[in-house]
Image (cartoon, rainbow over all chains, first blue to last red; front, side):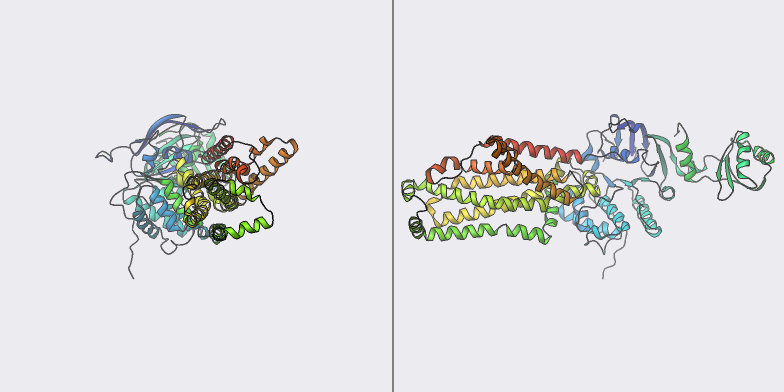
Length: 316
Length: 308
């Protein structure tokens, strides 16, 4: 690594296009540039998140496009690149009935550590991941949470500069999820960059500095989490007394786009910047409903996500 | 008791290059794990029993040569004059070749079983748990993955095939020192044949294992390939009297290679009547190589990243 390693972008890819040969485009000219840090990769099933991770790992060769990961080209530097990356797949992916310590040590050896160093490091990371007591047992007998932690240990064994995590909190109970996130936060604090692909939006909110939202093989939105959730200050949450549907229709007549939460009788409305609340009250009069509460809405990462995947053309 | 702080520690020195022989690492670790099963151990160590039995037979025969010839003459089992006319070197070669031929046939059965036990889960289980991703996310090429898995099987098959034969051969040479030079080429043949069967069986088994996500199905397919092709080829040969159909059988091809390498065709006339071999070495070798190549290609294809 040179002295400029820290200023190089973590990932810089342009025009990545992957299809699996049956006319289905997994990635459709995807552009992405991320600095070092912790980033969340969001998208619905089939959006292309896992394919993107495989391209970035050098496992899949894109039909078009190029770029670099950690300064290494994604074409032709696969093995050199994977030396510096840790990957925790979504699937079960345990190595037969090997004891945890042996499977992690083997992965360390395959990543270039000497046999003795790999074994020492395997003990260390298994202990870190909370499997110290279970390290001599086969993963066959592990619970879902233990398997997740074993996969994390395997990804960390060679101390990568960049960690790809595909659904790290999959199948974990709330306590297990919290432990996993705490571990990842510490790993990130020690200077390891992390890309988390997940469906669990709160995890991204808790763990990541920035978010990349992928839909239909393209990046539809990306940016820092705090900027995305506060970017639209003219969001209002309105609790009404009366028919929610009638009020929603009245809002639509005013040219607004309401989103209903029928379970709580709350309507979220995105207004034009600095347009005030006149249209909201006018709609209430027209629909003959009363406004019980009107509060400025804070966007959640879910709001950002759903907005992004509904937009025909996203923006960065 | 030491108290360990649970903090993530960075390595002082990061690995700067990938493992030199990743296949060897995979082979070593997975091989060690496979041998932890008592079934595998029983089969592996049991495969040395024929070597011991043959060694004992060689010892008894060499120590009681006169008595055996007398018995053979008494029961008119063979034309003694045939033996008396044969050159000593040819006699030693024929005897050793015949012993290895018989031992080879026994060991091939152990190899068949051991291949199934060791190899069936190797790729099938990885496909089931998608562990291939974990391997291929490391700095290694897919061919290293295949080689590593093949080493798990081939290493043990080689030992099971070669060690008993070399033991018997060495014992015969020690009991009859004059036979050493005549049998020198047999050492080479034992090693080459064992390596050929070990590698070809290993790669074919990996191909079979990659066809399914269940080790049981892989075992069933392996035995089907071995026995069904053998039975069909025998039926076709019997029905058409055309020995070219023997080449359809994996087992018969290995048998042909063994027989041809031992030159039994050239020697059987000199000492006793054995079934003559209808084929030459090269078609069988070619078929084995092509089948193994196809199996290898199948594994590589199955391990490619899939649509997600």
